[in-house]
Length: 158
Image (cartoon, rainbow, N blue to C red; front, side, top):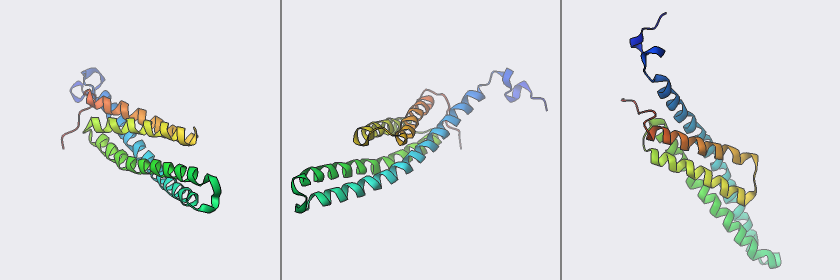
């Protein structure tokens, strides 16, 4: 079947390919952001549980001189777990805004937060393979949010 120039073929001058690429980028970044949110949910539960156990063991007088440092370390792990738990909601909201091509500032903040959380996690536990998805997702979310901020792909009318 032949395409007419008026239908938006390659020679018509319409920029449908760029709009499609921008929409695909937003959807991919949103899906990855939801995956990272689920990973952070499990990590948050682990940090909260592990930190609570460490703080509880440290508060026992049977541990000797290491009890105070164990309580402090456990409390720090619990605080990081709470930060991860808050990030889950922010990431899911950021993904929804990416899907809808609305509130690019919030989506941008979610991308920056993804990178910051992974950097903090590197300082807490060291670099590992599970830090890479969060960093890559943060970068993709920032690029996607900037693309529809600058008019790369406008939201479609419903």
